[in-house]
Length: 189
Length: 189
Image (cartoon, rainbow over all chains, first blue to last red; front, top):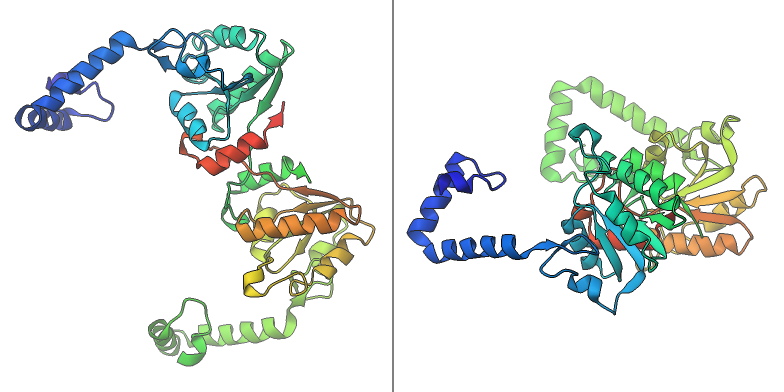
């Protein structure tokens, strides 16, 4: 059990031992719940056939909802990003989750990310605009660049979420790179 | 001397006393240098007639430089903002320093900020575009809005620096308000 607990990220031998003793001595119910939840998730969860996020059904509830705007497709790296976007209540379109980003040094190219699935989804006739919402890290930017070229080549309208100063941000306390971008990408009033 | 040192921001009676003893016992040279620098600055510094920043001459070196693009005028709140913009090396136009922002609750309106001076500067015939680079705080945004209306009414082209995710920013670690803005102000690729 100690050995098995070490599959959890950030858990070394000491933590694993402490967790094991805690569960056995103080929380056997919790251990059983965890055991069940793990098995249930592994058996039941799969990738939604439309957005590629985790789902219990073939097509997830979000992709199946008639209340969402099917003409907007927002591409994010991970399910956590999708959750953050949803928390803004500013987007009511559809999503596609890459489950990573391009990272040639780690051997993750277009094939490994199964970008052909995104392409098929974006070209299924319902999508009017693809919004690239990958991170503004090096990998996220490279991924957005690649996706932009790929999708525009198919005649799709593609946009990128804005770079600039955060809400509440002050020039004096912002890094030079961000200020430079905010200047370059200034908006006409 | 202790009483006088308390005019420095953040210096209470204890700090002032510590500073005074330090200067008298350990750094009389420093005290004289400070005395001279204060007097020199007060006697010599004034506001540049063009950009309103502090300057030793009627028109500051920056405003007088033929190497800068006179067709772009960037409006910032404070001299510290101007310094940050310069550190980016991304802007080679002219500046106008408001020396504050609109703040009706503190009795600072268009008249107190002498916005007629900015208007005269922006309308002097050399400026093609005014870039509003006030902060993205409530006051900075309100000031940008007011300036935008005022300058556009004179037929000037006006833009606002971009709001969005910072360089290197990750969706998962960005506040909801900023993500919402980054979505609204997305750029076509």
